[in-house]
Length: 110
Image (cartoon, rainbow, N blue to C red; front, side, top):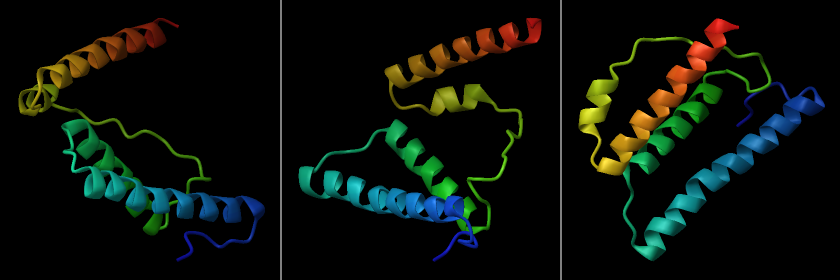
């Protein structure tokens, strides 16, 4: 399945890169969970959802070689916090939010 026109070297490299990423996406976790009988935490589940979203966007016709932009949305971090299963995950979220707030303040003062 081609995700672009494959006309340029960059397009062909993008196609190969995505192919290898998908191979790893399916093979890697399958081997871990199938053979080692290990569970998966919330962070792994979130990572898989994000990566799946990335691949679905590619199938919709978006390209990794085109310019992208961040779409700002309001997020209720309290709801996310209270749904987190472990204390360490909640601590990581708080730590990440503090670093993010400092970075945003620093960027605004420039």
